[in-house]
Length: 139
Image 1: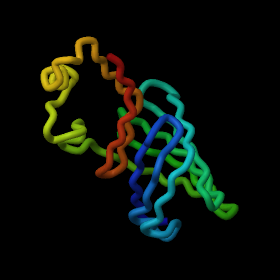
Image 2: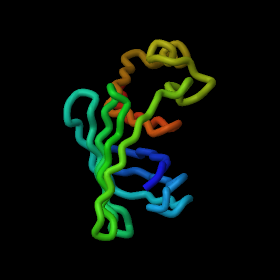
Image 3: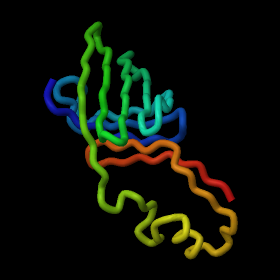
Image 4: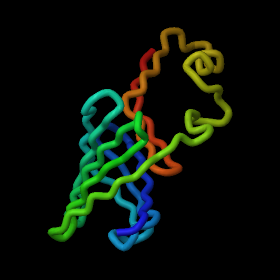
């Protein structure tokens, strides 16, 4: 198995979409699928994500945010693949909109009605040029 690339979008704690950009012969390039995912924090900055794809492929990712490393186990057609990858932060990846300032204080300044607004990042995943943040907000 050569170098592969996929994009992940987490819609919630239990739902995600992935797109295979380069399947390296293991998956079809351009394949997009949305499905259920289970995510658990193993220890601070280390998360386990697992899911089963429509074709029966089972995937488990362990993302170590402090080491910027992803280890995976993929069970496909009675074979196991264990790819390892790295990820880096993208410049400007901390913004939802280029029209809004960064940080909670910046958001409060842009929307003065947010008196007791809180933003707490729960999980942040990065794969290549893609970053997904799951956060809890209140206020």
